[in-house]
Amino acid sequence: METTPARLSRFFILLGAGLWLGGFIMLGFGVAPVNFGIAEQWQLTGENPAMPAQEIHYRTIGGELTGTSILRLNMMESLSLLLIVIGLVIAWNTQTGTVRNRIFRTVLAAIIALSFYYYAVHVGGRLTELRSTIPIDFSVTDDALKSVYHLEFDRLHKTYTRVASVAMLSIFLLFSLTVFDNLPGDKKDDDIPS
Image (cartoon, rainbow, N blue to C red; front, side):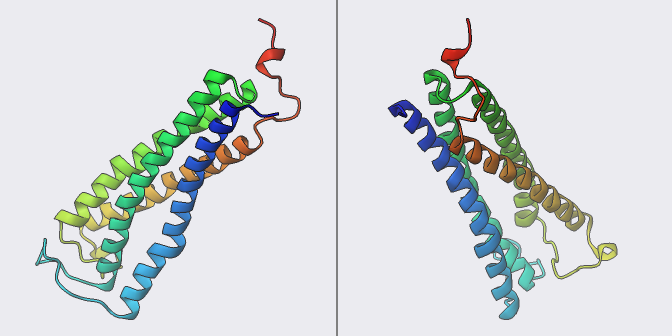
């Protein structure tokens, strides 16, 4: 029978990983495509109050809406990471699950944390800076005609997507290893000789 600390550990890890995965799925399925799709369908234009000289295209508006949503997602991701860490601390302190499983989950949590820092803080910070301080014409699609800042934005956007995908795969694995934390053939801490 599972102990209260084991249930608490599992709850925190599954809650953190589930929120994070759900947030990313919602961003990729329900936020970004909707923002860009409606902006394109309505051919939205206007003026950026912070940068009146910026050329406004539906992609500019869709990107601004999605970028703002990503900043909110980053706050939720920070909370999710905290929940995962709390769950792992409980697991290690109470020796919940198998040693091998705790090690794997801890390594995955480290990969997730490093990936999150890189894509959200390092890459995401620069993307936000470019989007909010430099008037980029997002209607230009030919790389030969793009400004150096537009090319940097595109490169960073691809990096963000790749690193976030690594984090999502790691979160999915962490979630799975938490659900199945008593793998057959693994030894419990009590079974390992001192």
